[in-house]
Length: 346
Ligand SMILES: Nc1ncnc2c1ncn2[C@@H]1O[C@H](COP(=O)(O)O)[C@@H](O)[C@H]1OP(=O)(O)O
Ligand SMILES: [Mg+2]
Image 1 (cartoon, rainbow, N blue to C red):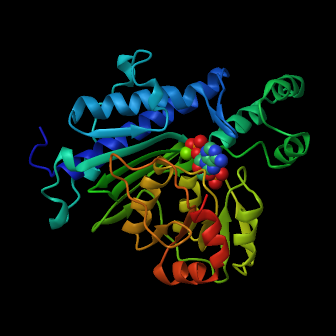
Image 2 (cartoon, rainbow, N blue to C red):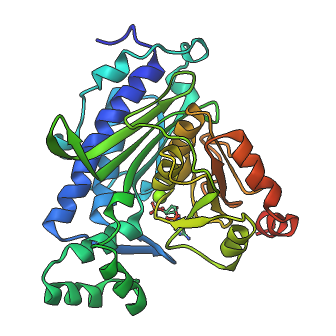
């Protein structure tokens, strides 16, 4: 039906609609209250929301674009469980379809593309948010006792943080062409919005190389250096890389998607994470959107990651990102060589 629209624009338009549906699944699982938390590895968890949202995204895109290579965080699920028809999205965002495709992307074919999917980035923030949504203190305490990974100190800090960090949760769909992220979607299921006077929940941010970004209002970086980094996966090397930045403030937030939003919305200047842990599905969509806005996302050594179908999944050498080249160079120059070597040899 939209065959005259170049593939990359159609795929981005479909991804926006699919991410919106996945975001609703994420909220529905939370409302039902049964998260079904499974421990995948150290500090690495999966919930019913991750599983269901991934099924929705992968099945919906595969049905419309059968020759795409799609790689998702929860790929071991591929053949398990049915995809209810209500999760199969065939709508396509009409506003995105109107975008003018840049000449260098007009001939892209499905075979040139890898789609990287993180159905729920910020799983720690999601599960801790669920805990904090239990308004009845006794119910909350009971859930805390069965929750896998929160220390008492952290529990108390969550209580002080106005019931958690659900805005940090995102759904990420990144589109890489010939190994480079060129388009992407970051959906925030818990973003609180006012649209034409009505309260709305959720928003969807997109980016396309050569076109730009949409779904939010970009803002220039803060006047002094503000760093954004992990709140749940820190270690001494991560802290060392923060110290050398000479920052006026450090924003510790969850998820790679939400950290890149901090850069795009002018709340932070640089995203620094000097550790393995992030994977290609965490950074593909954020990198595509950031670079469409004129920014740069690399590893801690200043090298771009590649997003082809056969690359290794972990971003072993960390993340360094900024809204412009100048801030990226500022940060890169400050990372000690020794620290770069430590990560490169991990
Ligand atoms: N040590 C780790 N183990 C598992 N996932 C990690 C680790 N470090 C980072 N991540 C993933 O990278 C994202 C950004 O990290 P952080 O929030 O710590 O800055 C996280 O949301 C998490 O993705 P996910 O939540 O999808 O599992
Ligand atoms: Mg993630």
